[in-house]
Image 1 (cartoon, rainbow, N blue to C red):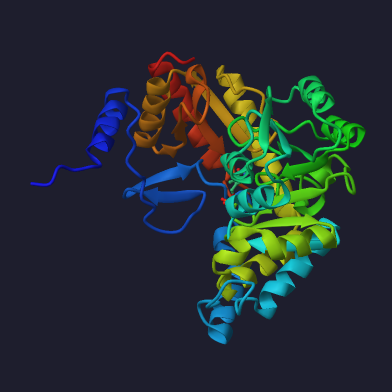
Image 2 (image 1 turned 120 degrees about the horizontal axis):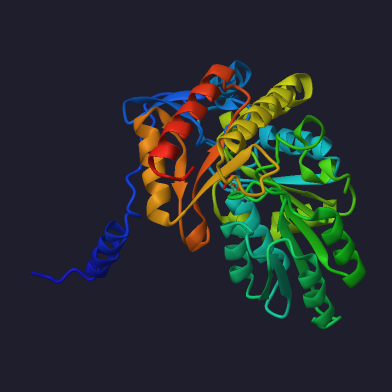
Length: 393
Ligand SMILES: *Cc1c(COP(=O)(O)O)cnc(C)c1O
């Protein structure tokens, strides 16, 4: 028999099992909602990024159906050949107006937007100056660019400034931060980083995936929240989280966007969105503009749930957003916490090394605008019970 050249993968999986870190995928039986059924088990769902409940919003659903009937299910090509439909252009125009930038390019995902953009704007003689907790897609894009990667400690602006100061003046430098950090829910130090970028002539880039639809007026993101309009050269947002559908985008100058049309590899070499996705995203922008009260509900729920966790004595870290981690410590304990919560009807995903530091394993909770207070209170009661059982509180 032929020896399995991938046999070493099973050894790695066995190690994960021994460490209590092997995970089965949870299967969602129906719609992605605040109360949902995973693995045939009804739970209060604190694990989605569906901040505003738009995954099942009637206006988005209708828009997707209408676009499918009118335009079919696929675009049939990459954007640069035959796959640019007028509905793609309409979405880009709408997003540019929403973000108050000259232009926008939409990618298949936020991951593709980050990785494709960083890799396109830099080359091997350049530098990326990056927060240590920046998203994986930024790290991958940086590696693909072949630029030299300089990492600064989380939100340590002095360290970032020192790095920028020491870099050769005649090389391109990209200073990059998440707007909202996805594991801790804290905000990037935008005002101070923008200032540093200006002082040292760096390109400023912000990945606003978890801020899109959540922060700023009508959900315009952290650039709006901090009033940094005009000071961030490359803004990345996602259409896959609060916007409820799928995709990512880059907002910036006309020159930047036209350059990405020519050089961003996911744009050139991967098929564009089905018309239904673009239509859903356009409808989502209508909702953000016409029903901003759903964002207010998200924040009311966030305040209620955070205060409840803190009152129970959990370590919720440094969150400033609807992402609230419940830090347990060791990886195995966080996974146990997540499993016990699930058995009691609350879904909060366990997250361990290498996604977070070894001693900072946690379950991550994300409330949405569509959770009822009763559902959130139920979740708090379960957290209290399980937290005591596992001696976390
Ligand atoms: C989720 C996320 C992305 C990727 O967005 P997708 O649209 O899901 O591909 C990028 N950056 C950050 C910070 C994220 O949290």
